[in-house]
Length: 137
Image (cartoon, rainbow, N blue to C red; front, side, top):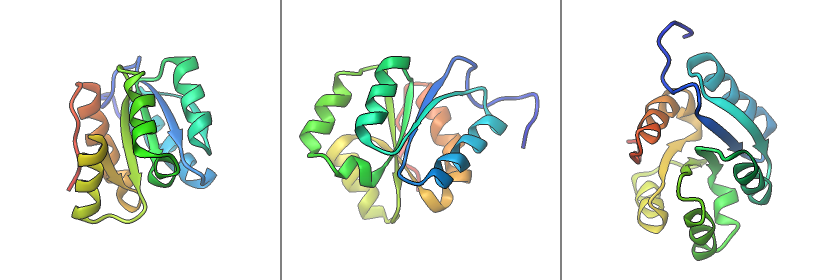
């Protein structure tokens, strides 16, 4: 769906963090084809994702829920609070209203389902560019 109208500003910098190289490539393709966002890096771990976010001053990190859950919630919150200009979008393996609500209440992050990423990513990302948080469904 490539056209003259883009969803995100040309200066938006994104880090994609997921263990699956195939899924990271899918998200990269969606972003490249439909936005002017700059994918500044991909990571298979939270540590690598945070290094890329800090190094390149990312605006958004697409973070797989399994990477987020591999660290205590309080530690992850402190890390992200230290990066106030970064928006986090959690990528859900299993999508239920209860799961989204738990992530919203625990961290206050936007969520998208991995199996719906191609349709959910752009509206959620657009909300993030405008400083809003959207939790999908």
